[in-house]
Image (tube, rainbow, N blue to C red; front, side, top):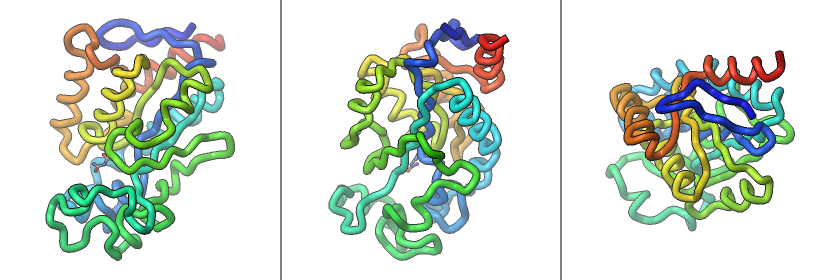
Length: 224
Ligand code: C5J
């Protein structure tokens, strides 16, 4: 077992039964012209976590953890996009419309792709999802159960939307989740900080939180 110095208390996991779940590190959320920017957000704060996410993925592959990337994107007919989601925000250029990165939040378009620094590698799993939570209308739970995965190290964007929704869905399904908090980001830094506190409050009511350095130290110590 590996034990990470985490809040509210140490988080232990067996690498053979653990996945890194990297949420939605897509051009649509991190780059100018994508969905996040069209919503009026300054996308720059999200870029700061890219090196840490890269290190977390490299550590996972090196230490034999499963790597799963989620991708928020709809099919080209928007058959999996609830009309309420498309209408939300009253955007002039919204989901399915042609934008600077191709059709907004549509699978196969440039904006839906992962940023170049965090492209999936052979052996990684990609789960496309139509919602904010990665368990809604996806095979994620089956994938995890078939692989015997019980622990998740979670990063990605945005902390208070897709990361938090997914953490809560995973927690309710019985997975132990560690939010690697410097591998997650929000357009609103105070939302990020608040989510970290919400996760670890009340004895870790939704999970644990730790910085990448603590995960790295624990994994490297296990190989010393
Ligand atoms: C949002 C996400 N914020 N990946 N998606 O719409 O957090």
